[in-house]
Image (cartoon, rainbow, N blue to C red; front, side):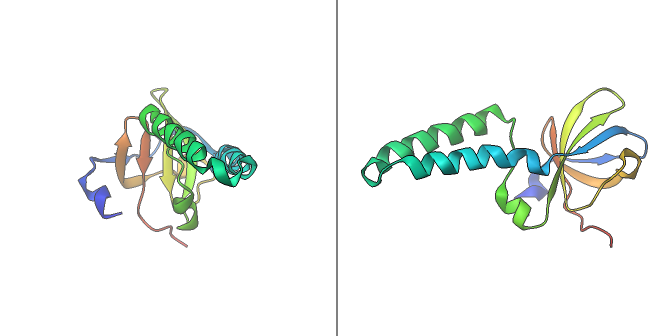
Length: 125
């Protein structure tokens, strides 16, 4: 989390978001798929499994389409697909619980890439 300070900062203003969808559970099938593939490989094919997983990790990393991290889930982060007034679709990672698009007002978000942002502020209870 200390590395986030090196990312560029942005903010989400009131009324900027027109649509929000919780997508935390959408990533679960991808990780379950990897898990079941690992179960089907015998012990003496560990090298093959390692090579396949390295290739998958490289594809996911370089495509920059999937920033879901199970450790962020453990830390209490939620994943949201949001749509801006300008028509952009973005991924927002936040500890806050959003139910309506009008609730999304964040003073400081860190830009991971052009379509992924992370909010590190604690949720207000």
